[in-house]
Image (cartoon, rainbow, N blue to C red):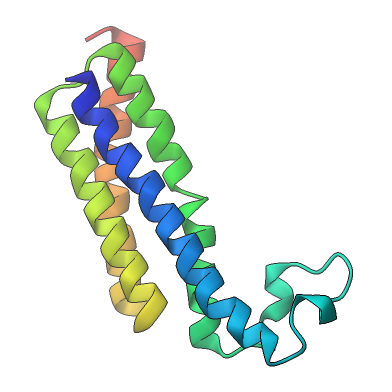
Amino acid sequence: MQAQVLAPAAVLVLWSLVMLVWLAATRLPAMAKGGGLGAAKPGGRGQDLEGVLPDPINWKAHNYTHLMEQPTLFYATVAILAIMGPIEHDVLFAWAYVVIRIIHSLWQATVNTVPVRFTLFMLSTFCLLMLALHAAKLTLLGA
C-alpha cells in the first residue's frame, strides 16, 4: 500500500512540471513583445510582471506558485503515511487531492473565477486534512 499512496504525489509532481511548461510557453512569448528576457531588469522576479503582462498570462504563474505552497504539506503527509502504513482511505483521499488540484489548476489558468477556485481549494484542503489527521494519529498514537 506504500506505493499506492506515493503514486498520487508522483502525479502531482508531474502536473506541477506541466504547469511550469505551460507558464513558460505563455509567458515567454508575451515577454518577447516587450523586448524579451534581455529587457528584464536585473534581479527581476515573476511578480514584477503583474500589471505588465495580461492577467490571463499571469494566471499560469499564479497557479504554479500555488502548486509550490500547500502541496508541500501533501508531499510530507503522504511520505509519513507511506512510512507508517497507509490504509485504503488514505489512497483515496490522496488521489482525490491530486485530481481536485489538477482541476483547480485548469480552472485558475483559464477561467479563474474566485468562487469556483475557492471551492476547489477547500475541497482539496479537506482531503489533505483527512490525510494529515491520519498521519498524526499514526505517528502520535501508533494506531
